[in-house]
Amino acid sequence: MNLDEVLIVADSSSDTLKVEGINFKSVPLKIITKEREFVDDGSLDTEEMMKFLISYSGRSSTSCPGIGEYVEAFAGYKYVFCITITSALSGSYSSALAAKRIFEKEHPYSQVCLIDSLSTGAEMVLLIEKLRELILSGKDFDTVESEIRQYQKKTGLVFMLKSIKNLANNGRVNHVVARVAEVLKISIVGKASDEGEFQQLDKCRGESRAFAALIKRLREEGFAKGKIAIGHCCNPDAARSFAEMVRKEFSNENIHIFQTRGLCCFYAELGGLMIGFEKD
Image 1 (cartoon, one colour):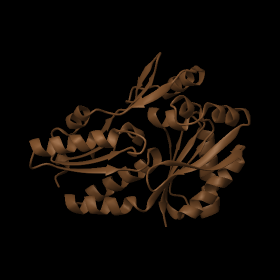
Image 2 (cartoon, helix red, strand yellow; image 1 turned 135 degrees about the vertical axis):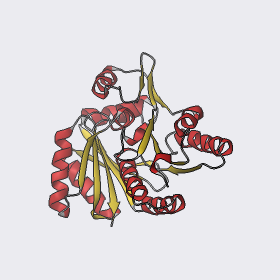
Image 3 (cartoon, one colour; image 1 turned 30 degrees about the horizontal axis):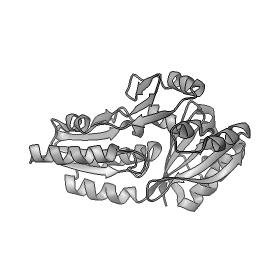
């Protein structure tokens, strides 16, 4: 494949704005309240958005990219690799699937590989990094598609949420449960299931107990010495502390830390961590 003809596309839940050496486009999701709407693009001030959401008590929701936004993103490229947030939480995959059908019909010599990440954030970061590696290695389209789908089976996501207020405002969690968790300073530890659902696993009082639960879940999910990506919502100290624990527990140095963008900040909330990992 000629690199000038190759494009990686991901919706903004991937927390990625640029991929070194490869054409890349981020298609933004939106965070919506009755008072304000936030477009999750490169100009979004995530800290300012989080300050607003912390003080906001009304209903909030997210909106996925439209079909036309994906068709527009694909335009001009012969080989497109597109990754979306899990279809269990968003219509982004459905929009991208419809766009793929339209684009390939209108451009019969173009090909679109569409991947439902069954996850979000940090796991998508790993998938994008692997796509970059496969494309730059000079493999053909079909080989890249086959190998990235095999790689996806060997990645996972665990997370720690210090608040579930936005999930409650989004109608996904009971408000009473969210309030109790806030008062008792309970952190929720969970994972992305094989079906792409966010699955709660542990309730922990205190960050140290939450970190211990995350380490336990990483072991159970098959992490050993592979890559690990840690996305944090305005909490770099916690991300660095957890990374140090990973180094100690697994003798692992292949760790990438980054600030989550708008969509993942909305779900992870202030202080939350999302950890993508490779299974052994």
